[in-house]
Image (cartoon, rainbow, N blue to C red; front, side, top):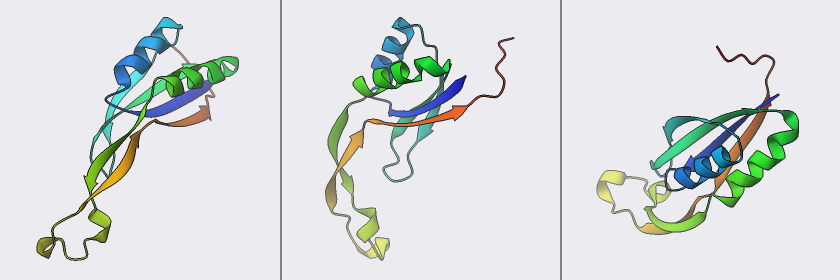
Length: 108
């Protein structure tokens, strides 16, 4: 048994969870936010059998879109109080996925 952690953009969570549910996967949703862009994310926790991990990951990837956005360039500001951040184009979205072994699983 495996536990999949998938961190996805709030913009994609509805399509990802809808497709996962349609295929018989159930996820626990946790609100989270990234530290760099400070934007909203959702972390999904999906427990599934080993042989279904690739299917779940495919669903997540297919429904998590990368997009471009402008964000302040916090890294180049050496003295933030004296400078004006210049927007830079960054790629956001997609999914960050981690899979870990589950030693024990119970549904009570």
